[in-house]
Image (cartoon, rainbow, N blue to C red; front, side, top):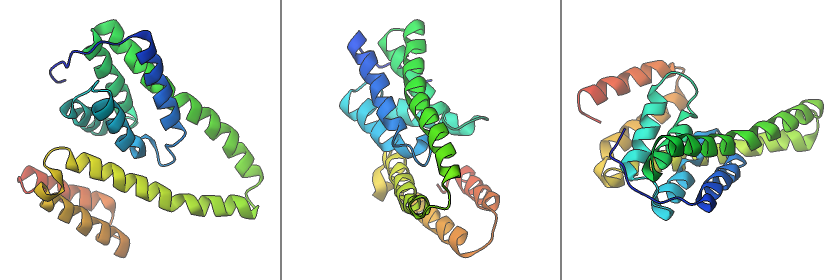
Amino acid sequence: MNTLHAISMQAQDWLNLFLHFVSLSLLAVGGAITTVPDMHRYLVDQQNWLTNEQFNTAIAIAQAAPGPNVLFVALFGWNVGLNAGGGWSALLGMTCTMLGLLLPSTILTSVSTRWGHRNRELRAVRAFKQGMAPIVIALMVATGWVLSSAQHGPRGDWNLWLLTAVSAIIMWRTRLHLLWLLGVGAILGASGWV
């Protein structure tokens, strides 16, 4: 994927990687993509286990590939493992990140969904659902900020920010299908505008 960034990992580091993704699992109320800012902080800024390029490339490949978009988490672990020593380490890294992110949230979702369905008429359940919407939106904005600022910073990508703002306004104010906006974005990207 990218050039290797040689690192040294001990057993405690693998455990810390797993536990960090366990904690992110419980924060990922809008999906795994909403925790990208903290993943970046931990993997790139704090631990130096991945480079900015490896981080962004993993997200781009996973988002472009068919299947669930959570695949970027597996690529993060894979790249950490490759940077730490090769094939078996890559499998260990992928296992740590994927199990750490998926296991707690799967169990919590299963239990809470059953409870929420049985108690869907309670005022507290309805309030919780309404209160989570702004949190998910804020986490998505933070993810967009981290991904778009990683290359040139917010000032260097003004046209990308303009396209994002226009797309958001169109989605909010019209009934235009999202695929049309994605198509326009693809054309603008292919032409070099963004």
